Length: 393
Image (cartoon, rainbow, N blue to C red):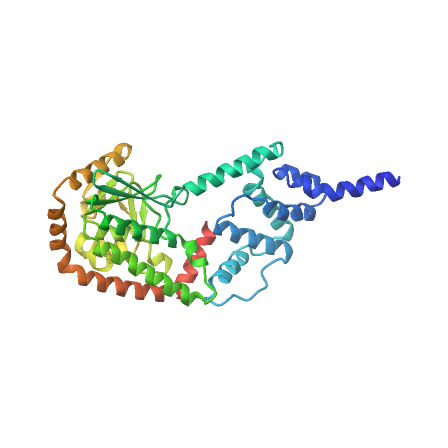
């Protein structure tokens, strides 16, 4: 009898370890829902990659609902975006029971961790996979640069995130344009995206990276970075070609007006949902879009967030030409190479004649847009809109 008791205690002691080795099926070793919930918390710590911010909010909300119940905290101040987003996620669960919240938490953890790792996989194999993943991560770059026949191609390279822009993305595109500006063997710069998207615009998780100094510091830094980024487009002295390979959103749409030539694939779309996110135009679109597409269509695009198809973008003058998706990259690069083969000084002087009359106007518009965006980023409208966006994901 004593032996049986000891064995039972031993099984209870090792049960969490057994559960950590496999997917949700492994949780069957736990005899009660609370034990499965406790095991899922430990299981989550074995995830090789951190979940995205939307998933983190869901995990937080389900954990609070499981342990506390319905949200009982007052709404945080709007300036505390992180706490506001967490509060909104928890509140959205309403009167969900603790039991159902635990079940959803366990299922979510299994989705994040369990389904990716088999209980039968040898430890050595898992270690090799982690090593392979680390090597791949080390060799990747979120912005790629290649030079061929006088063309420096800048490729936005976060296909798993639809080439969304982080702070690092902004800095690397600035650096790539400066390199193209300085290199004697480069006559043309070409911007494009990896994967299905050109770019989904700003990575809204940037808004959750609030420094210790507070949201005002975040807004100040973002304002300065954006003004410098757009300023680099304004002052780029060589021909700048955009090859929009797929959907483009936000900043990657507005800066097309600062490119000299824009090509797109027939699968491309163009969307500037500023108002729906409590924000306002940037990239000098406030002055360039009315000139390019006329004031009425520009207002629909910039105010109401009207999405343009590739055909509409060409019709209104935002895009020069549309090519089939299956050979778009080769066709656009071929056009850029043909441009780069022309006399380089002639190209630079021609661009200077076109850009100089409006250069000061563009810099003034850039500054005004960034100042307004700083105010928008700290506003209740923007904070609420972004919190709702994370809830929809």
